Image 1 (cartoon, protein in one colour):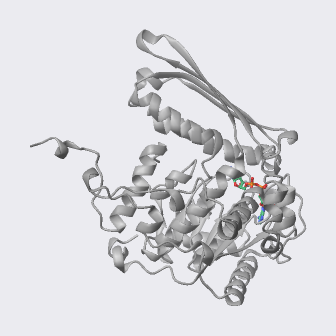
Image 2 (image 1 turned 90 degrees about the vertical axis):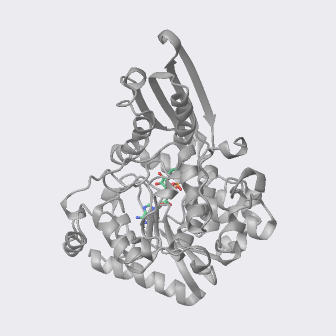
Image 3 (image 1 turned 135 degrees about the vertical axis):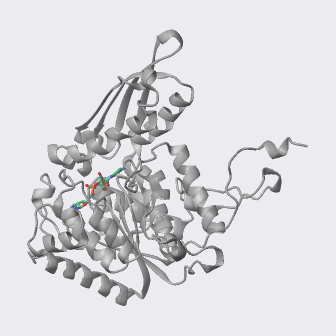
Length: 444
Ligand SMILES: NC(=O)c1ccc[n+]([C@@H]2O[C@H](COP(=O)([O-])OP(=O)(O)OC[C@H]3O[C@@H](n4cnc5c(N)ncnc54)[C@H](O)[C@@H]3O)[C@@H](O)[C@H]2O)c1
């Protein structure tokens, strides 16, 4: 991203017209919970609970100034009424049928917005079973070669834009977790990647085809899964070339959210850690996909890196050099989307005396994820209008495994991430950065 391209304050493009929200995985639990909730907010006056963009505030200037607007009043975000939903899935259920099957929301909530949901039907997906072994779907594009599949996706997007008078779009991946892929040669440069597309290189997964179609159409791409997708040099370069924002990976909800809330507190108080054992039961389709070792490995990598980065064992060897970190996910159908997670945390304090913390989080996965989808769509669109291209590190707040520039390490601490997000908004709106020094209130 070039600094001279960044627009600030009144230079930031207006949020006029309709914003298309393009969702691979349209029929999934996260996607249908998000869309149903959006309609309940727009039509029935529900509160967008959990959305920083809608409900959060930002302090500006000194505490004595008492300027604390809502974020949505501080920056020009798209109006919720201007959002239009579109997407792809390997199952052909419309969003009404898919929301009922997902089993997250009560029937009343879904019936209340039924006409809108029935009108949103997935397009045929770009799907290859090798990448998501536990799914079997037939609502899939017939083209075989990668360049043709990309063209088919681009045609879908163009048709949607034309038919619905859409001005701008954001693509957000709410599709399944793909099998584990490591960055390899084909992912290193745009040229190598494009050559790989020509020969249907197996290191290029379906999610990368969606991302390529989006980026080369000038559409920001957000990765809600732990898939490698845009976390490769070729895609980062592509995003810079087409001047679009990208962000990922893996929505930060549930156990990892708790981890990034609790562990910064332990470190702040210099309490040591011997071990952190996390396990959970989950019975939705995501749980079924993650029951495959390939998809689980992708998820495991994403979940495991968090503590290492927050606790910095190299800087605090006495406290964190030898902690044992284990994460397991168990597919248990009776619980559906209502995940139950257990964390057993073995810590130590003064003179090494051991203590224990237990967290038993009975969460609802998609209820936690839906507001993140909303915020990411709104902020990615805002970033695009502000000329912020490439990796959007300021959106790390939303991800388990945030993307970061070469030579850096990722910032996982939720509170640092929040400060980074708000300071980015202050920077873009030409407001003073808040350092929390506070001495100015005492120096006479
Ligand atoms: N709290 C959360 O729910 C949460 C948190 C972090 C990450 N995630 C990730 O978000 C994603 C969605 O989660 P979910 O609970 O909605 O899962 P889900 O299984 O209910 O939905 C995923 C949908 O993607 C579809 N799909 C799979 N491959 C596709 C393809 N190539 N093209 C189009 N559609 C495709 C599936 O058919 C399914 O309908 C998963 O990758 C999950 O790991 C979810």
